[in-house]
Length: 64
Image 1: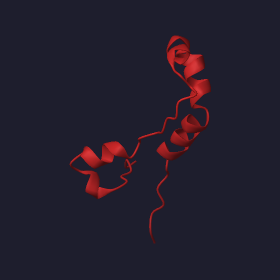
Image 2: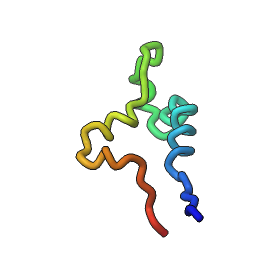
Image 3: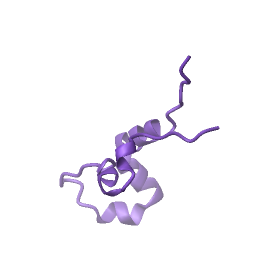
């Protein structure tokens, strides 16, 4: 029997991406005002995995 692991990080990333502008407007209004929202932006959440030495391990989960 394989143990199922909960993905607590994924849903937070999805919510943050979906509501990014509203998130910044609410929590960081001065920063939000300085951003040119008509410019394209992309989330680089996978980029850090490319520079971290343990990235080859893949997704890891915290044990309970």
